[in-house]
Length: 324
Image 1 (cartoon, rainbow, N blue to C red):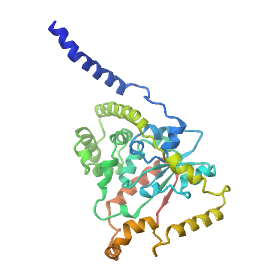
Image 2 (image 1 turned 90 degrees about the vertical axis):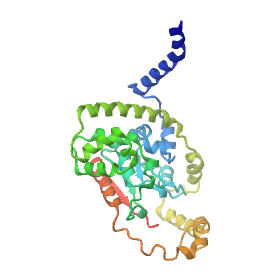
Image 3 (image 1 turned 180 degrees about the horizontal axis):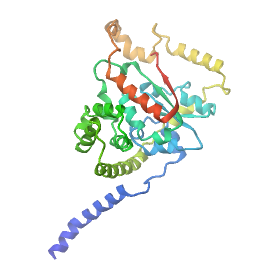
Image 4 (image 1 turned 45 degrees about the vertical axis):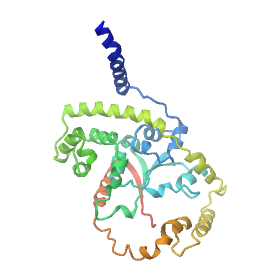
């Protein structure tokens, strides 16, 4: 009788653990991602999408629409009528940007995000937008924890067949981050890579199980990454564009909008930003960046790793340097 009572107490818990374990180790996908889901995710700026794999895999394997990854940071968020995503949709161009990044994403996080996209990126194109503020003398990876993905780290380790100088460099960089140092499994494996020692068969088996569990987790939570950006920001912006794709007309319209939106200051800064972020601190900001030095930064090496990765996986890559 006592045994039966214990079963009624602990049995359901045990069964629940078994079912959850089976769910996370199942060999099939746990969700269905539609074309509409991918379209909305392409402008969602969702951290789940950025750190995950399921939605991006669906996008870059979509043969009916050519999604091109646009890597960047805060500049991607400006979904005005001249945004590449808006122009591509309006004029039915032969590609559609899939926006990856927001304020705080830099080369180190982008390098990891590329690891789960290598099969899809092969022989395709990418656009990488570089921001000057990444290249500070002191390590600026304050946002790394916010965008760090254990799934991407697992993908990176799984893809290493022959250890390269880039792999060793990236291993050393990752070991500087607390998210890696505090994870015994990853710290052990990544330390091996940094010492030019290949992962053992046991390491790879453990990594495969870990990857499958993280992938199932991503498939479950990617369903919660819904965004209204397409309906609330993209569709209204489409209506503001001329019907014909004419560079001269687009330039004229962009210039007109730019002048109207930068009319309250001499710096050509957007009116709202100037009023709330600059105007009240104008004297304090004057000359404050005179001694900024972008010549020495860990970011250069991180960016070099990104370029090395892009060279492995794509035929064409455009690198843009924003002027503001």
